[in-house]
Image 1: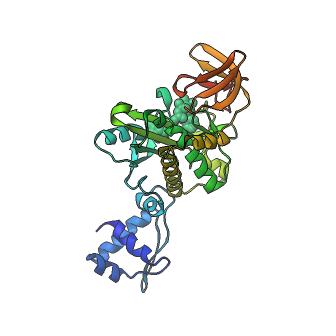
Image 2: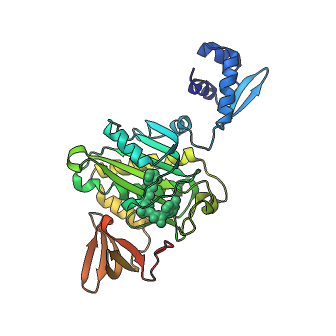
Image 3: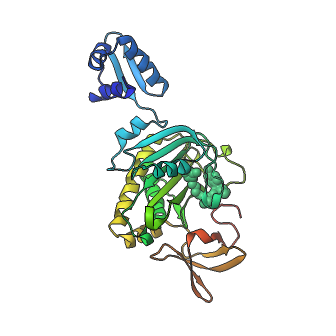
Length: 330
Ligand code: BT5
């Protein structure tokens, strides 16, 4: 008997008691083993009331990550329909790549409660303490080579929209896809290609969100923010996951329907620093100018004294003219 079966029975009539006898009959197990499973569910954070005469009543599902709860909340067609949660992984992106090579399906999600070797872009470290949302999605998009690279832009719009919808948080996007609240980084996105674009057409989208932990759990040199600190309480990670996946599926479908212009408008409306004087650093070179937004290809457009210069995401870093950019140390 899977614990899921018990949950299914308890949710058929929300708020009502289901007798231990009924559960044991329907699932063909003893009442003692039902009780054992109920205790396990309570340990996982399900609030289940047990009354001798009446039976069991599910009062509340846990806020901590739980695949069954996420599944109940999902409004997507394919994103998250296959979903794995692990206690600890080196990196969910690395695991997702592995799964993709083994035939992982479009929309498959892998989440870890903590990562011991979380990665940012260019192999930078991504700190992933317990309480955060660290997840990767396998995407096998129906997109041309050129458009597939825009998926990370779409992902940043999706995460901003989910945070706004759930918590009314005004989060901005720092080009190309850092999410910033009040000058502090609250989430990061990492898009990685599996194999070669023209052959395999698979991308891994890694999304990391500082959620239920205090800022002190991250290194002191990092200008980060966490949802728990901003909102003053912990958030429901299942709800957050389901909301992100729904927005993400919507954005990816829009891209597949060739709506890049719309994505461009949506991205720009959420971006920080447009119209401001910035420095763009490429290796030893420093370019100064006004940040004018992004091109149809997702490149950064910089208006310099010598005309417009375009930069693509992998090659440069963006800073305000004061040397720092929205709180991130130089
Ligand atoms: C990113 O890289 O912002 C992409 C982060 C993607 C993380 C997710 S979590 C799930 C999946 N699995 C992975 O292994 N990765 C993805 P980048 O723009 O390169 O930013 C990295 C920089 O952010 C670091 O050099 C630090 O300065 C800073 N940083 C590290 N951990 C942070 C955190 N938890 N919050 C805010 N800033 C952090």
